[in-house]
Image (cartoon, rainbow, N blue to C red; front, side):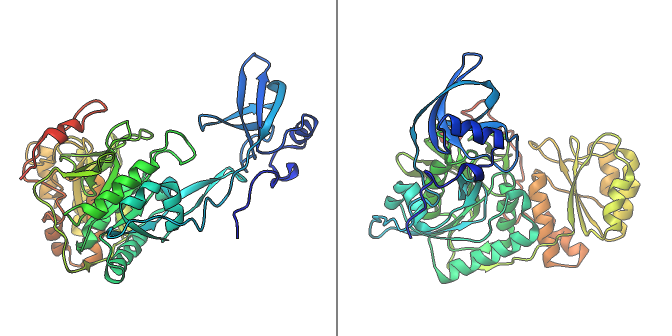
Length: 469
């Protein structure tokens, strides 16, 4: 069935605009998806395509998609004159049925869609996005992949990344195991929303003990309808990592610079989203990235000398506990904030303390009681760079005495995912503490170097740095 064309397919009554705006559009011969030139009362001139009104917002405001891909809202009372320049034809479904010219002998890469901007296209009828994730659509959006890998794809979830839960991590881990065992791809690419991608990537790093290839999380900071979208470059980089990397770890592949050449593969247990909108938002903390990909030359360079190699076996332990909390300490925090978790039956608590790993003195006895009641309490630092050292100041020493487990140079989000996974494996508190102290997926290092590079080109240091042993 051919895709529905949008020109003329959205009647004015169903456009979402108010009766007054619909009347104005009829009077001026404007339809949804008309290309127009608006002259505003203040002299500003705008050119773009008239879009349907999203379900939310002021119904008196005309939505115009400008040539640069951005949408702008203009109240019709500000429009002094309008010219209709033509009609725009688009499709809702992309190009289903498109035949990709895939080269012979290429590695196979399996895509799993979980939601987020990367796995969505804009639905111009509602102004929202909808999931797309077939191999044909991926090839049609990013034809460069035809020369890199044989793609297969499926949608596992269609949710916002903030709706991810430990239960979703468990399902994802189980499905990764199934795909490697039944499809035998060189690697798996997971399309994921960027906001909680580092949580999911860390979770999978602990759940997947042995894999035949990498699991590469990727996403997009900017939607595919914007000229500045990072989706295509990130997918190309992620596919190259999945197909070529010698390691079999859970990693995040995202822009490593503001331009479209470099993608960095960060260990899932070392990565963090550090900017809300930049394309190079992800950084490796207390570590170099695991690999660098030149998207133009398609060269992959491993930057670290130690990694988990590809295995002939698949070993995945997918259980996670949903009774773990990540709590950020703040000045004046009362004890009942922590007591709440004990009362609600939480088994693990990751504290994001200050500096070397501290909370206010008044909370120490509360923490001691939680530990005595069988809650595993872990200490991380809000500083991110550096490591916890609870032997320097009295507060830290007393917290250690109370039974708090230091997380060394582990990220708070990683500690949260790790403790959730550990408590999904064992009911024994002492065994849980022992496992937490183990370096299971390169989430900690014995010696923390201060690795941070201000400015957009911080990753250049990683390019020049030889592999770290």
